[in-house]
Length: 345
Image 1 (cartoon, helix red, strand yellow):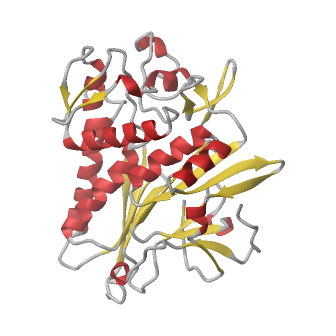
Image 2 (tube, rainbow, N blue to C red):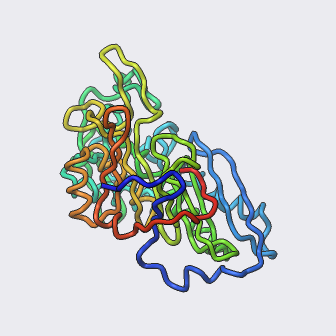
Image 3 (cartoon, rainbow, N blue to C red):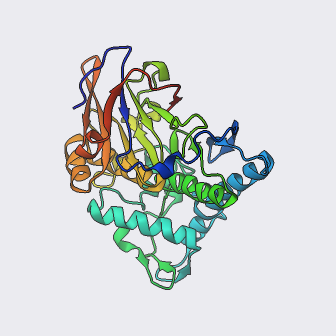
């Protein structure tokens, strides 16, 4: 458990594998530019050191191409997306997946296996029943029965099939992958020092021109960044948070949120409010944050420790909150009151 800090001090998370290579952008003399826009029903922001020979228009276009690719392949809101067409494919039919879709599905199935199905990418019907997603409130528009991740078959030739009642939903992992894909594109352009965000999920590479890292405040309960007690130095690492501070709706039989427990078919219950995960890729951080939330504080912390995941679990404790952290998270912690400006997570 993280110990409380005085208001003028913060806990600082610093990756344990930092090298001089992460600081090669220090003293560059370049300006930091901000680009932003909308994607995936949310916003995106990119802070980066801009080399003089690359236009901001070119950089924006490269990022948006990545976002558009993920939407085109993996959106469950678009009836013409590759994912929607896969869901609609006949039982047992081999469906050739695009390389990006295949990589995301493979990772989702791996985490499903590691959590024994507590994380399940085939919860589309259950999410609709909870009042979220494109079929919110109308799960009757979907097949009457729901499958599980075990009904999916992913083959070495890049094809996949399902048992005929699949409602694959990759919303818990695709946004993180979109950040990773865009980050790879930026590096190909020669942009190596940047902080990229989509709707509160981040990936940081390199540093600022003054050698400072890209600071991000962990704010899972929606406080102001200035009040957040923990900030992370995102250098070659990603951050994602799954929580229920905002995504709640009132149903006839009680309150519901979008993080579904496949075992019950309903919103995960308990005092847990948010889980934050730091991982080498945003795809991993995104998916594991969801998986650990559904597992709950106790089982989630055990699972995270078993797999070496740096995670923070925030639960309600009376009028306040309690935080439980994993050993991998603890190893990144230090204290500082001079952490510089931060971006609100």
